[in-house]
Length: 290
Length: 334
Image (cartoon, rainbow over all chains, first blue to last red; front, side, top):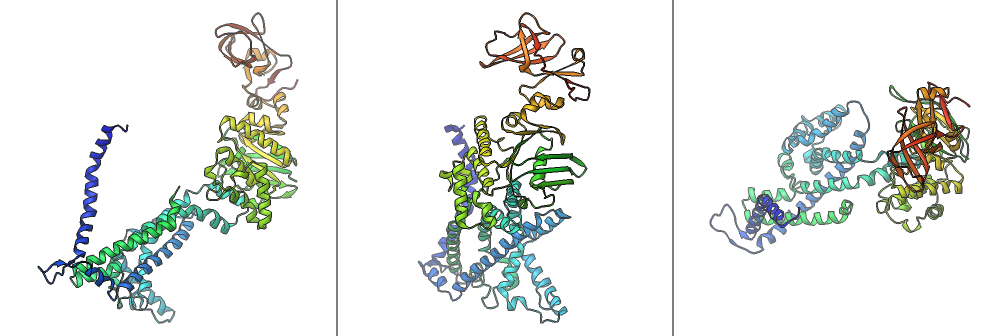
């Protein structure tokens, strides 16, 4: 069917979608790129002018830039570690025939449907609150000094909240992969004398490699731009302890009204995301080849 | 070192009974084939012996030791699965070495065993490939290699050739038979293909609906079928069964004559019939004959017979080659 006519027709049919997608992505990106080279502060309207790389110089030499970069990577790394290990264990558990399997699976998936701001607020006020939270109540039951989570372990708290949201995603993907493992392979390994642990490490884990790769790639993309959870819980604090790149850019643009500087930060974040993506594809991408 | 005894073994899944009651003795070094139509419980029986399924009742003994509740790995049996069940992320070497690695064998011992197995199975050039880079026959050999290195008490084959094409199947059939001669280890082989069973087996177990219909050497089964099921199942093309008045003349509810046990004549004979289709294969000719009494008979005769479709032929069964069955399908002796 690959005649010249059908090819032209196919291109025409696809054109609207391609144009829309390109516009959707390219216009904001080029505008950001344009603003990043402008001296553009909302407090000084009408005084915009081209400044070359000044915005980049200011942003990269910002006192909080390196800590924000580190926070971003710690957040991504922490959440990935928890969700991959936890997701694999949960998937192994959910793969067992248990009573009320359907309900249990639904409950496990539920956190994914809660929007980020809501789940962060639930954690902040119901669980981690130093006075009214469930954790502080538990601490007092055991006569222990309750922890003020967001003051004493702010980054850890954020990681826990985000990991809680993404655990279902990881579990779901890994569970699907687990169920696609050929039963005869497990039986063969059993007859070959592999106990539960060798079975997991030699047979199951290699089978899951591809699914885990997908989880890592997709999660990284979303975790690099975590924002809502930080805004409603710590507001980037205390100090800049939980300020990641996204939050730093937000502070530049919407708290200091410096659009040019924030745009430069945005471009830096895009470049960072690409660097991370390239590294990830190098490290884990080979698993995706058939 | 691999005699296997089943003592009144039963297996049911919930309310469904797959195997009502089976007792069987397999002697050391025998090549035993379980054959039967699909759903007859032959694979289940193999999995019971392997330990992949728990028995519902009865005992399984290997070399006299009760292994009814033993873990599959403890039974020291090796299994070749229908899907081969190779580990896709491991090389051929890794696959074959896996059972030894699980036993905790030393590196040198593993290398030696893998080398030997690869040499026996002509896999030496493929040791570093992944299973997906191999052809069907090569994968089959890797699966066998993985089974060999453990030096098991017995090999279990679960329809190992059903995924191969016809030519390769014949070749692999020979290879497995030769392997059995070379190793002298007990082998249990499950298939639904009676040709495989006849060509490979020392002894055949014919199963139907979870029961053993007959247990014997291929020629015993061919020449002295215990009942109508075995008579119809063993031999290709299938045995012709004639019921009614013709059978009554022989003092039986039904009589059976194999296609190759007819004498064909164009002048005179016991039964007259019209040839529907004549298949001339060169070496043989198959005639599909509609007899006067309305029975459809398959006849196998020599290649050069000049009979065509639509012609009338006379068929006579050879002396002593008429099998008689009573109303229950049991063979009537004599």
